[in-house]
Image 1: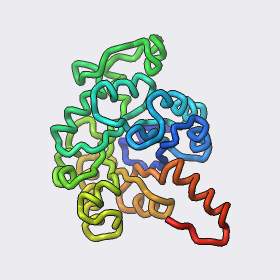
Image 2: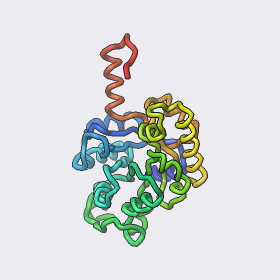
Image 3: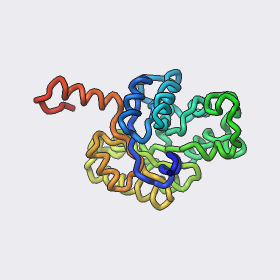
Image 4: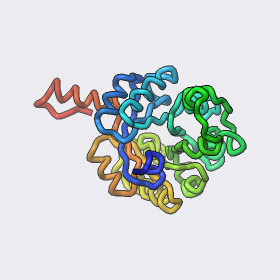
Length: 253
């Protein structure tokens, strides 16, 4: 059976959700719900790095891998979440191939990258991990967000960069940058979807996106996006709570 990394790199369909409540218990609920992966959102979420380990452990208890979106692409931020045990990193708002290449270096130990070398942390089994630096480097997932017109215009070059495993569209930011904020069925946004999916396919990479609901997730899967997040823990809770509180009313935005 293929590992999580192998599934993603082979562009096999997987479905996850964002964790932005910063709660290990909520992460465990999501892990028990059947998601293929979970993503702790350190950029927009309520929790910080201090809550990351609990969420990683909650996923691991049920065999669900956990990756993290860092709040910035600073070397120290990337290295810290990797040392804590995240299986991959999502980089927000990288606008050029040069920015992507610089950020990706933080994922890997030298000489390939510039990640700080330490073997006594959680990710390295507190000193018991016997893997080589090269093996560790190869085990880390690199997810680059396409969130601006600049990144979109250079997406083919970004997709060709070694270490980019997933091109991940941030719908809100990208649609805003395109001048069609929130209009996810508009012609400019749909054209952007097609371009990112094609760039990923041609480069042998995966395309990913955040979907608001299961129906949208299914549509994205059918249109070339294999790494799809369905909403977030808070959005899923809010939706379920509103239906419970007002079962006879239509859900409001």
